[in-house]
Picture (cartoon, helix red, strand yellow):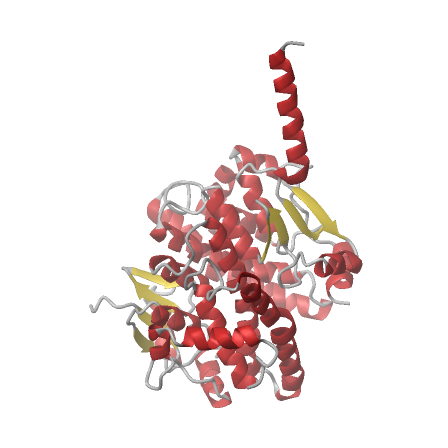
Length: 242
Length: 222
């Protein structure tokens, strides 16, 4: 072999070793949406490959707690760039800044933050629906749909209407767009005709869905998680609430 | 007209207090417009001032910012209380989010129905003493510096002090097992802008009493 080949092979072997140890972010959570789904969306939209380590039983959580991996004893936790990041917003902020999904200046960031915080509030409502006891579900559903259709979605319909651009802020993709798309899809799972009153959100959904990284994430077989069924809810109760 | 930020909220701590702390720590003078009755809130909602129909809202730099964290992030960035790079920001964010969780428990206590108060109190104190304060004691111990992140004042330090003081209102000896938090508390309290905020007559709000809650419920939940 020529000397150049040896160098090239050595380089490949070094890269492989590095990749196995530290390359991709690693997500620690149960195998369901919960509070980690937004983070999966952001990484996917940014085109960042990631690994997942799923908690399946209480002992999996205890192990992480005991080895000091979880700053406040809670998941989500994401291993990234040599850190073990916890707290959904801390993780989302880091990823968004690193991959340029956070606007170009302080004022754009303020808009993005406002939008995203509203979306987090709505996400909390949608997320808690699954773990409610049967006798509370109906009222919660009514409240959640009311908030979606009367408080949150009208805001984003108006933002798009007012500036007429494709993206919510600064005419470029940001976490606000990604998080809005995530919420729109979830809301639609609960109420398929939810876009009846929001034509701009409907076209927003179509446009964003065509961005290559996002399109890929929306396809079957991606790391996007389905709505939680009884089995997942059961598992969550056992891991976190027993 | 004055150029100062203007805070819209009821005359109490709630979700606006961390914002008051941050502005005060940054040495920024601010005005307050208090929501005293339901009509005050409705007026703000009807004139389109509240993006999601909710307060806190802060008028600052030509914007009407809502959502506590959006407001805090803006103030922290603007006044250099958010670390010097992405990694410091990640640490600050983690600490602040944990403190928000503890803060939530503390502010929710006064809303608990009488038959749930005791259990809520026990849970809140357990979390403070076993989940949150040990983390910050350890952070200070591990690096031996005066501030939580990057050896300079950040919103993490301001928020930790706020939460410590609130926890002490519930349990005066809560820092008994945390000597470094005790000296942290003394040290941060002595920073001139913060010292000023801690004095009587400042815009810092007193603990919320049950009668204040009754008033707030009339405005926000009726």
